[in-house]
Length: 252
Image (cartoon, rainbow, N blue to C red; front, side, top):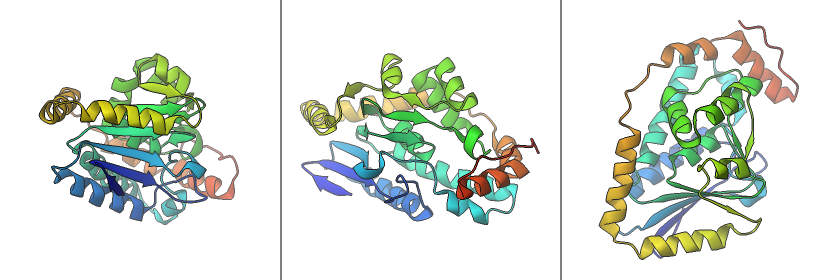
């Protein structure tokens, strides 16, 4: 994390692994979010992936090799959910600058941000039904559904579609679509507008947006998380991913 002129710049980086998340990266994100939540000298927070590897892929699949039970998967989702809550608790506007792919956990981080700016050609998705055979928590699905709409969310999840930034601009998820190389200028324009605004108004409006989004009742999900993480298909998905082959699904 770098702090400059009241803005925290956070770069997601796992070189050569498409910035996929390790346990250490999740812990670092949680610690950073805790630090930012206690600061009163911030105007905004910007998330960006290491440009060599796009925004961010999902969790580093090698870490799933140690899972032996459904409970391992449920505990993992609880761990990620705790990080998500910390990111959502950042009190100032959060901006995602997306180039390349934001998939899986990368998409989850984008969904935690208030404003999304993307390059043409960037792609978003959670193709876990095709790649790993696991599941997403209800809170993430609810956030995706509210941000992109029912039909787009269904296509992304059920058909494992990677959706281009152009299509997500049309539904309002991507606030601004820029040409390749245009993210820094777009970010500076947004930050300038935020800095010109009344800080208490900005923080209050952000919290109200979150309260409205969180007003829907919680949906139970751990039974379905356990069903997927405890399945032979999930084990097969991890092995196939690491072996760079297509998985053979059995529905068991």
